[in-house]
Length: 522
Image (cartoon, rainbow, N blue to C red; front, top):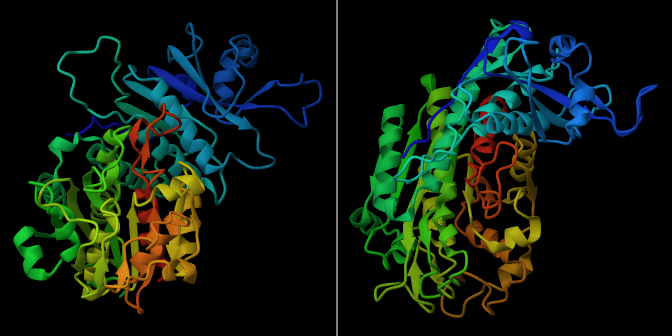
C-alpha cells in the first residue's frame, strides 16, 4: 500500500508574487537580548519573509501577536492575505528564538517545514520562503527544508472504506524559494531529497501496513519487487533454503507461525567498483511480535506490527542507494519472521545452532530479534564487509535509557561515533553506549556457548545485553555498529514536526549519511 507522494521544485521568484495556495514564512520568538524599543516577547520575522512583510505594511508581526502567535518551534498560524500578496493564505511557522549571528539549525528548519506542510493539508500547491543561509551551510539548510517538506506531507493511505469528509488531502506540490533555482548544488539537493524522502516514506508505508497483510513471505515479496525495479541484485531465501543453509536462529523464531520466515539479500555494486570498501546493512524484520511462548501483555501489543522497522529502514535505504549511486558497495540483509505462540514454537530451554555454528540457549522467546539478526550478521560477515551497520527495534531498555527520540548505539567505538555524528546531521540522534564485560559474563550458559539474555533473567542493562549478544556473531575484522531504535522507530503520539503517527522511517537518513561518509572517506 503506497501513500500519496508530494512533488518538489525550486523557485527564485519573489515569494509575494508566487501563484500558490499558500506561502510559508518563518518567525522567531524574541525572548532575550531584545532589540531597542521592542517589547518583551515580540516576534521577529525570519529572513525570506521580507516581501511578504512589506505587502502587509509592516503590520504582520502585530497581527500575528493579536492571533496569539508565540514563534515557538513548530507553531503554525494561518491568516488570509486578502489580496496583499498573490497567495490567498500566508502560514507562519515558529522557529524559536533567533540564533545569534547564524541561520536556524537544520533540524529546526526540517521540523518547521514538516509542520507547515502538514498544517496546510487541503492546499494543492504550497511555497516555502524559509530562511536559508548564503554561505557554506546553505546545502545543509536546503536539504533540511526539502526533506522536512516531503516528510511532513506524508500520510499513510490506510484502509477506510468510506470517504472521510473532514480529511483533507496532503499537499501535492511544494515549491522552495531559493536565491537561484538553477544552481547546480541546489538542484542536487532536490534530487537527493526526493530519493531520501521517498525511501523514508516507503519505510513508513511498510511499518504502517496491517500485520495480516505483511507477513514474512509478503514482506519479502514487496521488498524484492521494489528492489528489482530499482536495479538492485536480489536473493530471497525461503524456509527450505534457510534450513539447507543452517540459519537456525531465523528458523527457530519463525517456526511457530504458519507464515514461514525469509532472508532477503539486496546488493548494490557501484560502477567501476567504487572505492573498494564494502558496507553491510542489516535490519530486524519481525513482522509481528507476540513474544512467542514468553507472550507479551495484551496492552499495546498492536504496535508490535512495527517490530520490522529495522528491516523496513534497510530495505528502503537500499532503494535510495540504488537511486543515489554512491561510490561504495552496499549490501542489505533483511531477516524476516513472525514470532507466534503455537505447538511448533521454539521454547525457553531450547538450544539453537546458529548460522555461525555457535549454540544459543533460549531463555526468553521474546528476545527473538537478536536470534534472527545473529544469523544475518554472520552471513554478512561471511560474504565480506568492512563496515556493518545493523538496526532494530530490539529492546525496551533503549526506551527506558534514552527515550523515544534517541537511538542507542553499541559496537566498534570509532564506528559508533560516526553513527552519532550522522544522527546529529540528519536529525536522527543516537547515543553511544558501552558493552561491559560483566554484562557478557551474566549471559554465560551452562549448556551452550551463550544464552540470549542474562542467565538470571535480570533486566539490568537490558539494552546492553542485546548489543553484547550480537557482538558474538561479528567477526574480528569487521567494524560494526548496532543501532537500537525501539523508541524512535515508531511514533505513537500526535504528529509533530515531520513525524506523523506511526512509522517514522528512522534511521533511513542516518544509514544513507553513513554510506555517503564511507564512500567519501573510507
